[in-house]
Image (cartoon, rainbow, N blue to C red):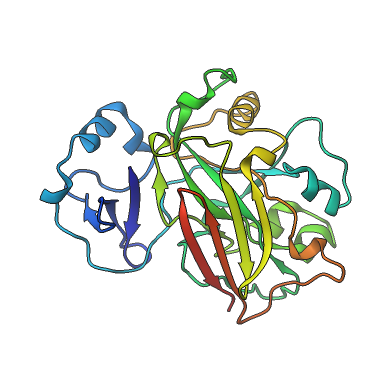
Length: 277
């Protein structure tokens, strides 16, 4: 299934994409697309639906594909070439940091340059949405804890992140720094999560291009590792890391400026586009 949330901020309606690509209204069945939708009874009901019997949602804004996100856990340096361009050795275990859930926005929303911002950067990432509580879960059982996947743009302000007191949290958490979606795709729709092409363009120039098989730590390893340190709950989001090609890693650096357009694609997960304002 491809689950969506369509509507203006705060007024999104739950939907599901049918075979023709239309969004069908799920609001009579689920209140929203959040952690509760992954309950086995709800998923069984959704899978049994005759989508043609549901009303079509009017065209509109794609909101974040998941709401009620308790926490966003990001993985740093999870592609060897990105670690290298950032001046670090490949980590021996996942590097974790947090991003405020208030940074989430829609796949086609504008990305705002924050007040005082000067080094705005992009990162195409595979987003992993947790569907079942995971605590000290094994690598072998980790896949059972996945609710769905999405495209995630881990937007960063590098001066906020690395200069001054150098706190990653404040460089990652500004409003609109987490475009998410357009769809939340359930695992049964994806043949091999470890073999998806990722691409990010800025003004039609390819900046990032890789495959999820290039990740140092795959999705099951990440879920298992993170669940050792915190309980993952339905609706939590893991941003699994980005490949090389970020603006900070270029020589000279090529940070985003107002008017720049980012376009992100991941196999099976759709497309995003944001303009910097």
